[in-house]
Image (cartoon, rainbow, N blue to C red; front, top):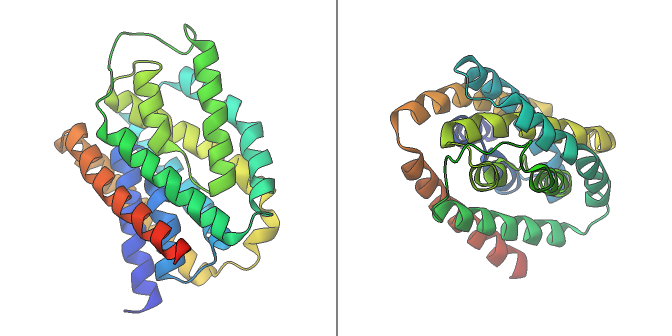
Length: 249
């Protein structure tokens, strides 16, 4: 199968995850870029940020139209994560490749476990009523984005549900605002690493992801959030296990 076809298929899967779950796209994007398209872990994390930023902004527009974005809470989360995302982006360029891969696999496994656990919903709390928790969580997500090239939505959604008691649809929509801001902040510090990116593959990957995000939004309206999360969690566990085995063998 040609690299272009692989890029299109992988991009569609990434977009579907982002549109339906509000996160998780980069957790699929990075392994796809490494194992399917042959990028190094450092190049894959940078390319992933480009893809996830474009896709998240598209999915954010779709969710905003249906009123699923809590702009005030999302802005607080995003603001807290901007500096950590930029700082961690600098650190990531100096870490050994196996360390980046192993760290990414560990985070993917953690995300899968979090998604398999039932969350709390709906007590009506807001970011204004729990500012310390919201800011702390936002800073942590920003650092994760900068270090590993992930948008952080797979942790942002559970955080918005458990820390701020958002209903699932609002958590998904709001997480996309956080992902977009954090990814952009991290990309600013990785400008030099974009020089070696093969745009002939990354552009189609991003285009397919953007189209997939719209399909993911429609899928989320038809399928229960619990089923989507559990299915995606199983895929994540398999990806994490494969990456860990590949790193240490």
